[in-house]
Amino acid sequence: MFSFFKKKPVAPEAPATPAVAPTPAPSVAPSPELPELLPIEEPAEKKQSWMARLKAGLAKTSNNLSVLFVGAKIDDALYDELEAALLMSDAGVDATTYLLDTLKRRVKEDKLLDAAAVKAALKQLLLELLTPLERPFELGRHTPTVMMIAGVNGAGKTTTIGKLAKHMQTHGQSVLLAAGDTFRAAAREQLMVWGQRNNITVISQASGDPAAVAFDAVQSGKAKGLDVVMVDTAGRLPTQLHLMEELKKVQRVLGKGMEGAPHETLLVIDGNTGQNALAQVKAFDDALKLTGLVITKLDGTAKGGVLAAIARVRPVPVYFIGVGEKIDDLQPFVAAEFVEALLG
Ligand SMILES: Nc1nc2c(ncn2[C@@H]2O[C@H](COP(=O)(O)OP(=O)(O)OP(=O)(O)O)[C@@H](O)[C@H]2O)c(=O)[nH]1
Image (cartoon, rainbow, N blue to C red; front, side, top):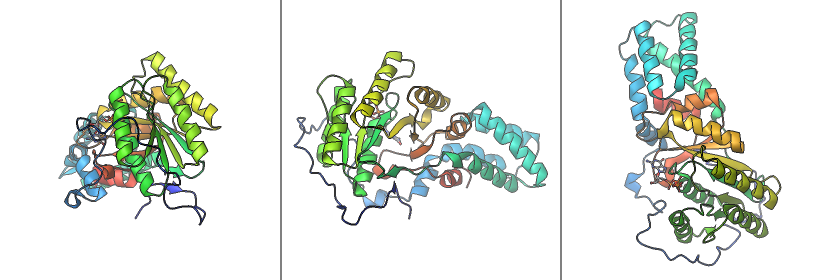
C-alpha cells in the first residue's frame, strides 16, 4: 500500500473529518445539463488495479518500444528503430540522443549479447532518468497549504482539482476550492455543483477578478483553519501574454493573502500533446516558477515519452499522472511503475 499524499504527522487530537462545516449551498442549483466533474462512485467491477490501468493507458507507447526487442539482433538497425520509436513517443531529440548514446556505451561495457538484456538496460536507464522527477506531494506543512493550478485550455485542470480534492478529503483533509476561472461561467458552475455534491466549499464570484477570488479563498481558508486551499485558474496559452500576466498577479495576490503562498504552483499538462507539453512546462515555469506537474490523459497516447523530455530539459517534479477520467485514474507518479508499464 502506498500513501497518496505524504503528510506531516498529525497530532492525536486532530479531527479525522474536515474541521469546518461546508459553507451554505452555493447559489447555483445542480443542473442536469452540466457535465459531472467526475463520477462520485465507481462500480466495483470497473475497478482495476492501478498498474493494470497504467499499463493499459500506456499501451500505445509501450507497444511501439517493446516490439523492437522481440527476436532482434543487436545491430545498427535496432538502434535506428529504437531512435525512431523514442522520437515518435515524443521523448524529444535531447532525451533520445542521451538514451541511445548511454545505452550503446553500456551494451559495450557490459558486453550485452541479446535483445532482452538490451531492453533491460534501456529500462534501467529510463528509470535513472525519470526517478529525479518523482517527488511525494506533501501536506500539513502549512495551514492551509495553498495550491494554484494552471494550464492551457482543456488540459484537465478542473477535473484534476476535483480528483485531488476527493483524495484529500478521503485522507481526512479539509479542502476549500476557489473557482478562479472567472472567464468561463460553465467552468465555475461545474466546480460549484461538484463542490455541492461532494460537501466541499467552493469560493466563487459571478464576475470579476480571478486574483480577488483567490485572495478571498486564502482569507477564508486561514480564518477557518482549513488544511488545503486549491485555486483553479482559467486555461490560457503561454503566448497570451496579458493572460500570463494575470496569472502572475493571482500568484502575487495569494502571497499577500498568506505569506509564502502559494506553497504549490502546479501545471496540468495533457500528456497527449507531446513536445508541445514540454514547451508549456518551459513557458509556465519561466513565468511562475512551478513546483510540480500533473500529467493527464496518458491513457491511449503514443506520446508517453514526453516525461523523458521533461526530465532532460526542464525537470520539474511530476506529482501526479492521470490515465482516465475516474477519480482513481489520477495517482502519484512513481518512476519504477511508469517504466514497468512502458517496458515491463
Ligand atoms: N482520457 C482522459 N481524459 C481526461 C483526463 N483528465 C481529464 N480528462 C478530460 O479532459 C477534459 C477537459 O478537462 P477539464 O478538467 O475541463 O480541463 P480544464 O483544463 O479545466 O479546461 P478549461 O476549463 O477549458 O481550461 C474533460 O473531458 C476531462 O474529463 C485523463 O487523465 N484522461
